[in-house]
Length: 138
Image (tube, rainbow, N blue to C red; front, side, top):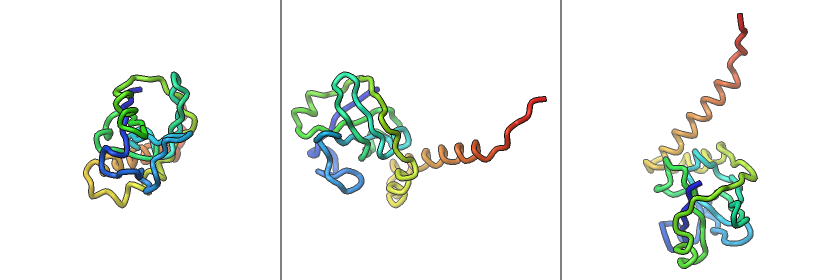
């Protein structure tokens, strides 16, 4: 998994994540992703460091990528992380429904609209798969 790092001094939200809550640099740390790839609430552990993260943020540069941006409390920690390819263990998959609820009011932003469109396509595929009658073989 490709990872990068950010800090509250980078980007536009300051100390807050996409939910308006404070970014966490504690036991379970904040991370950002394209929510159509890793939905809001996804918890994971980095195999090499054993650090735990939860996806509670997104960034426009992440949309359309499989990159996860890890929150670091200081600029030095962010720079020391740089770009790394790491193995992650998914501990809990997040909610695409919750992702859509948070993103829907923000659709005026083109990059957010891209995530919403991708999430809605996934939802439509799942709905069709669940409602299709089983095929019989002849």
